[in-house]
Image (cartoon, rainbow, N blue to C red):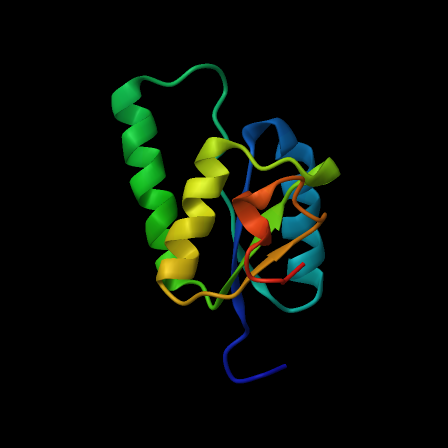
Amino acid sequence: MPARPDIVCICGSARFVAEMRDAVRDLTLRGIIPLAPAEMDGAVSAEQKAHLDALHRHKIDLADRVLVVNPGGYVGASTASEIAYARAAGKPVSFTDQPEDAAGADNGES
């Protein structure tokens, strides 16, 4: 194992919580530190969502790279915003599935 394991921030739609849990498990077993979105039971207020979004951007800042969990190629507006943020910060972005639109496809990584 390297002196400091890679840190990967997981991004994706809340509809893919089970798939993101699988990604956390798989990365951990490979010796990688995963940073995943917070899981919420039920609806959150606008203020809570803003706080959670800001916190997740800090996770992106901490990460060496970003993994987008996007079964079927789906990338929603929030995830697209996180991808743009990560790319602006110079973070490599990869996907579990080829994005279905231009939201994530502009750097050729998958």
